[in-house]
Length: 74
Image (cartoon, rainbow, N blue to C red; front, side):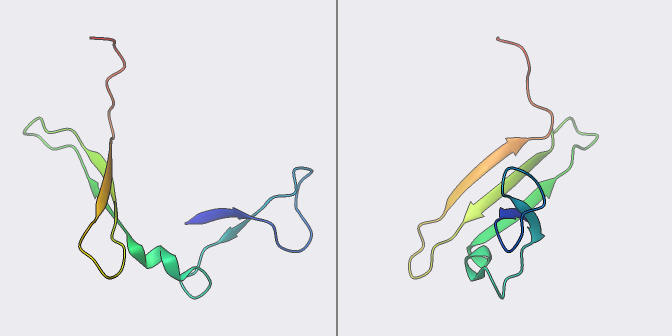
């Protein structure tokens, strides 16, 4: 995973530099679980799911994004 961070000398004029994210430096990353479901022959569309699980309680929140979104206004 890549994160925009400012460390040291920036690589571009906007002051941002892309660096790899490591759990050792960003321990909150373990609170997010990701899953990719690919489309299959049964007609089910694929999706990307990101679930946030905060420590201490069972209140998790999920965000699901279709791999093939509808582009019409029906």
